[in-house]
Image (cartoon, rainbow, N blue to C red; front, side, top):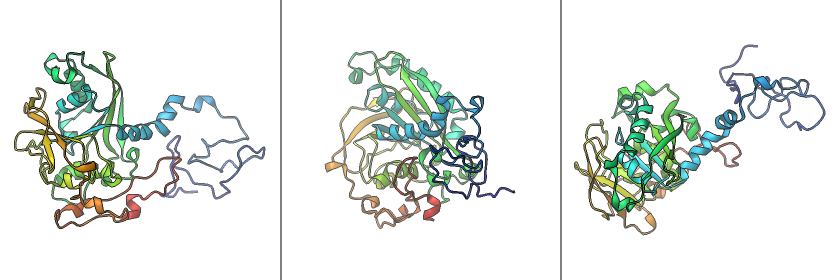
Length: 361
């Protein structure tokens, strides 16, 4: 029988198969023999348990590979994003903010975003190597942060690709706003691609710091912020505010901007650069300027802290989101309606109903 385009793919081997229409609530502990076409847990007949024949161990994956493919990656990303994070929109190759926040122990997760990332970083591995190399350079030593202690030297443990499904969304389009006023060609080049980024896990070669998760997404920064934190009423610990001016910006990221509007709960810190960048409303400077030697333009940046009580942003349209609308209009931010408000699908084992972007359109 010919397979239908809507037939599911096996979660184990990835092959398309026809789902069985027999009872799916069979107690697999019973001695009765199920049909070879009976499947469960999204497995094809070849991978599903079959009591009539023993499983061939040679056809099974390694335990570590199976766990990483089925459980580890999505849960690892979810756990990493629940930790203190640094978020850098329009990051390019600028490794210094990641070095500063990770080496100071302030964050255990770094999230870089740049929708030109694939053209800027033809091989993301090269960027991760730059991060490693820069962490070993003495010129990064910051006595104010490290107080004379030995600073971390980051070394790669493992790396891998990130798909939209790994972040809980069915399509890469969930990470782009409904507008074509920016980067049209770049967006068209990636429409059909499932990979939206890459992750790297680092450990401190000196043994003085906890492990670091580095996530680099090739997506639009404001929509990505909404997906990761805004719709959940959460925030990263810090956001880098730097208008480099050479990244084909379709909107500014400093001052009273759309990224500020996308944050119903404000990050505690902003790391604000010069070159015409100003902090978001309600932030005050709490550190001296420092020169980031490895930045694209040797930027001078300073730390700003939110003065908002309970870190609430009353100006954010998402502060009044009912949890159901797929977009919101705002008099203060007339362009805010271009952003999608889509809840990620729950991971396996979650009882909460999913609302995918396809269901919401």
